[in-house]
Length: 303
Image (cartoon, rainbow, N blue to C red; front, side, top):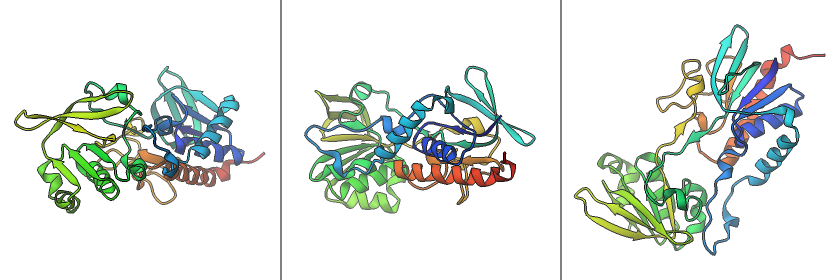
């Protein structure tokens, strides 16, 4: 029986685990990998990314410590979390069951893929899924944002403040009726391709062009210094669906202390309804979740 099980090995999960270790909790991190979103980053030709705030130093430090403390981690995906009276059972993909007095769920999100030729080949080489993180690198450059919904609009708008030109591919008429959508349509350095879809990504060492197809099957190629796929994120919350409250998008609802609707289960990072999908935000939420879990467990601790 563990005091605490942390599910997820990204910035939030790593930070929560290290804070729990510092509090001398009997903690186990359960995840298919370590690093989460920090395992993916954008590389651009001839660009120094010192302007990007990534928080890699913190995450790398915690990851190195956990790789050394192998007894604090179990590398396997989690299928379900269930409650049994005053304890929780974490069931892994291989059929194992791990018991704990409390659980932190920090499983992040999945990016939606285009599933078009060139996407896999150019991932992290001129193409990625986080325009907001890398916008400062695109001063006087050209960028393509692919997607509809708030995430795509917000990404195009932020890039529009620094780039020479932004192409927004795929928004719907409904998206463009929002305040941000109207701003993008009126911006001189933004081209909105409503109803278009990307059919191919082309380039050499890096992604350089996208092939788009319009509502009437017209095709065009767009050149760009960087390409961003910004479709709605899918929270990895299925393991606690039906156990804790989720919002309409499937994110875990938490309060200011990272508590869910079930006492003893805490949430941290992108899988929750916390604002902003950023590494440093996730790390901070992981620290908060661990401290809240420690406060919850304190009456049960002792020699």
